[in-house]
Length: 445
Image 1 (cartoon, rainbow, N blue to C red):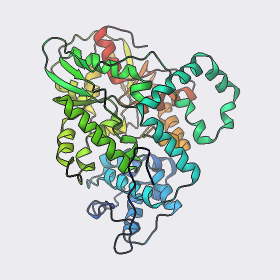
Image 2 (cartoon, one colour):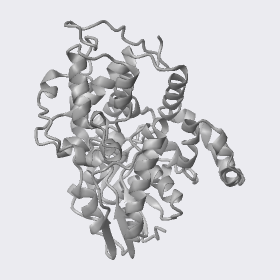
Image 3 (cartoon, rainbow, N blue to C red):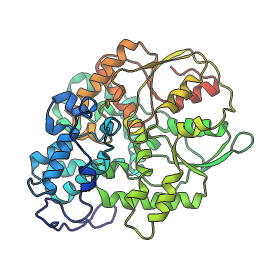
Image 4 (tube, rainbow, N blue to C red):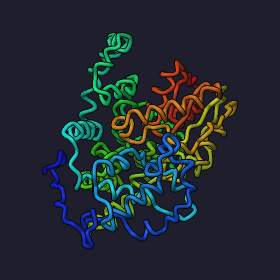
């Protein structure tokens, strides 16, 4: 079957010993064998917290993978549902005392599912539509105008108040509350000079949804990096990084996009590659692993990944140059899972926010538990996503924060929708937008 990116999917062939998996990158037994089923992961697993179902916990899913590896279980719809319900938040990896790399197990398992499991026609169409839109910035750009008209005409308000959304299928209905409020596009120059003496030449990964629907985040990122002495290069030819695809098991298409990203940034000749979307950042840091079989790209992918840093990592490592102006605000900081658990970036965003005079930082309880965004999760598992989003919003509300800060556009949209369901109008901003407001002496709400 041809993919929308022009590649042909692998043809599955059974692995030896009656395994349910094919021979292309099955889940690694050396990772499976590390799990001692101790249960430390349970308290931080969002789906186990919701349902208290063993097969919807990390150790339960590892058991399912192991039995499938041994041929004791097959890839049935029920078996698949336990992996579809996983958010891939990696909180279990932070909690695990045995060092089980659950992320690699999940991604390899999901790739097997997409090759060996026949989804329903609606499921295939729904997922194909998501990937055809959200991995193609040029298509999202076309959608800006009808979305802008929908919001500015008052039609969105009418639709929401009328109850018309209830007529849509649940998964389509889930998309509407997540729509960002469109603001004027802020174009990013291909090269932005450093203010003062240049310290670094950095490349900026622009993202897809963020590039077109939340351009203010990239604009703020460029301004802050420039103010701190970085020359910022944003290659125009950069494509999607493939994060949504690889996290959903669409391995071949994801690898094609990874190669294009590597090509674009190699031509840019930068010292470092900066990410400001946690899901994208965790993915590009794994390019060396993803492209390990490609003789043309394996070494180049390793070199590329070694250069990738979240914007808060870059800024926290640079001696402060730009003046910090006071911001009188109480900020509730939300850890994005792919920043906290997948990348291990926890102190840097907090340190940057704490450097702002007058700002008060509040910690959200259950910080390790996902908000329910998780890539395409809130579009394909809306009930669980909403339950987790509401749980997070209920923990934020008592903090009486002026603003919620986070490091991922998916979390930003999820938290906005969740707070709105509780009748809360607390704005949700990217951490870099708050620092940008501080440097420019601007109000943030």
